Length: 255
Image 1 (tube, rainbow, N blue to C red):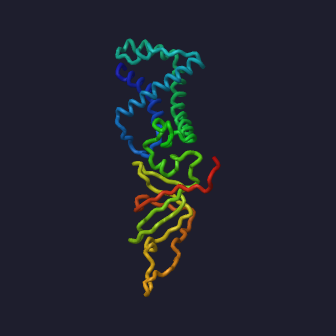
Image 2: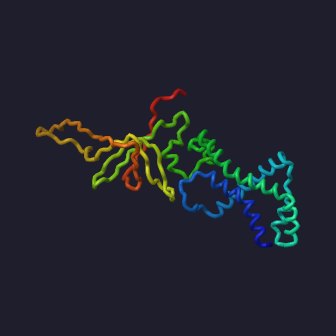
Image 3: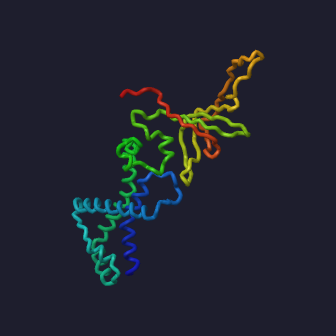
């Protein structure tokens, strides 16, 4: 008991901080987090302290409950007799403690979603923002590149055009379309792009026109692009040779 109880107490005290840290960050990698262990723990501890201070303040104002640090220290003690005395005090406020941690864990899930929505709505994370060093999601580079999130609100693109060269049957083919959605793999690398209104053409059509017998280039204008039938075109990033991104605004908005 004197070994397991302090570990359980520390786990539940720090758990909200780890949950909040994970939910708040926008990361494109879904595999294991390879951040330095010290960085992860330090951030989680800081978040835990902040959320516990806020929650204890609310508990005192709303329910009139007061934090008793002596009870917590006794629970963390290695002496069995001391732990038993603290356990009795804990049992007397069992339902209050359960309600406290349950509501705190729910808030640790919900609060980051609301905070991320505010950051995204007011574009506090864009590179030109004065608060970008605090709010920018540094582990989501494709998000900024393929959503136009780095633009100011009055300069945000209406659509994003994708031009990609893909090798098809040992021939380079250019595909052009409007970006609808994109997906990344578990390592955070771009996996596939979903395009609409796609057209294609072989790059061989970019070759100079043949000259006539008198040395003057023949003026011809063949059909260069061919529409690709279908509502959505899935382009795998691993099969592309080059990728060009163009931000398009359909009309100049009034300032």
